[in-house]
Image 1 (cartoon, rainbow, N blue to C red):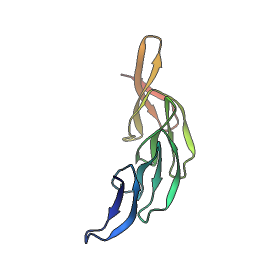
Image 2 (image 1 turned 135 degrees about the horizontal axis):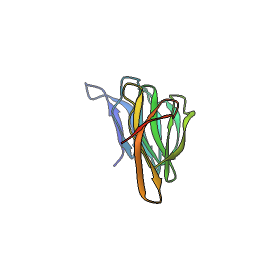
Image 3 (image 1 turned 120 degrees about the horizontal axis):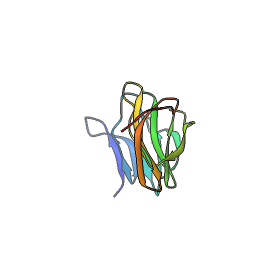
Amino acid sequence: AKIGYIDKNGKNTIDFKYDLAAHYYSDGLAFAKRGSHWGYIDKIGREIIAFKFDGATHFSEELAGVTRGTFKGYINNKGDEILPFKFAEVGPFKAGFARVALKTSHGLDEGYIDKNGEPYFRG
């Protein structure tokens, strides 16, 4: 079964062609999966960010965590890489900070970063 979008009257607004899809957030974008890749669409179904990621999350404070291979990083609403794909885990930004984890020889090293990727403190 494929996923699409309908309006409150049940009218089809975006074709049912996605394998998974999220609801729209305040930025007007939804992440969706087509085949084995994730991308972002707007409310009329236009592909805003190419379906090239192995995982995706919603935007928070203008950045979204996405996965490429086994690493995660952050992109902006144009799909530009803002913070490098080096993290094992990424969380949403809140008040300018996001919880992240780096894989080390001892497991995961968790902490917080700001929007420039600077560590805030380790958790």
